[in-house]
Length: 427
Image: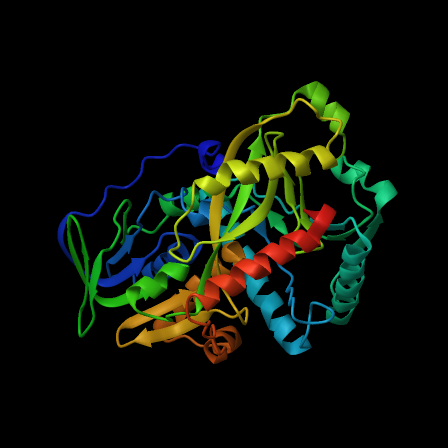
């Protein structure tokens, strides 16, 4: 069960679509990208009807299952200093900050209860290899001119309550949120000319002068289609063999008692990402729970696999016990999986896919900020607006091709296995 979903405010899902509907715009996928695109289309075209369809319930899917980090800084894992080309890094930073700004404004305007906090983030290392990553990233941040604080292991307990780590790099620009609460709130704050239909999985599409989306209960005919469903965009016939549905796994504890909070110490609200990308991500939440996220699987069909949950919950338990030995009796209330749409070259798609079909796809693990900003800017581009950020996104080469099966699964699974093994105590 997804802990973020079950601990976020309840809402009344919008009815699934039924019958025949005609609209100027149809948007598929009501995650961060689709909600942003639908919102901005509605603002740019106030006289047009926008139909937004979601296969599941808003807040239950991928956008409500991430770790809740709205990150501002670029992190190019292919570069020696994790920053790479400085011009690209500056534009990426500008994109991410704009995504944060858009979300802050909507949350403030509509009073969305998602515990949004400008808490920053800690990137923490256990082993020498992880410390070297922090040192390299620090050099990149110097080049980019971005602030940070180096925190030695002996000082970390006053920040995050654990002495497990040797060193951490604190960067102040990250915003932490309760992701399911945020996406639910965004859905309930859509403009009046957006009609949202949940529990409406599309089963067939006809392309042409008009786009016809068919599902079990009816059909939606639109002049223009926007795809905002990440790896599932391949199911619609586009970007075949480019996006990798990789699943991550998380567990959320029960709330800590007052005595346990005192035993833990540290700040009441924080987030830690690992120096090693295969390590553990941690959160202390507004309701005094601890989130542990680690472990990966490659699910080519894009669907979760129940058999992994119990296995990885045990891994979460071991990771928790290593970091928080002062909390021996704290168990997990929830364990769940969530998917990422990754590309081999770490690039996404933005622009036109076919006549009357457009997309913002493949966020590469930055769905909160990147999904929000690309969905918004795609709607602006469709309204005829231009600017340096839109031009940058349009010029991006997009995700590259992956090898055919069975070589793809063999390669990805080997990479995941080796990465998790190499992470060692970072996991």
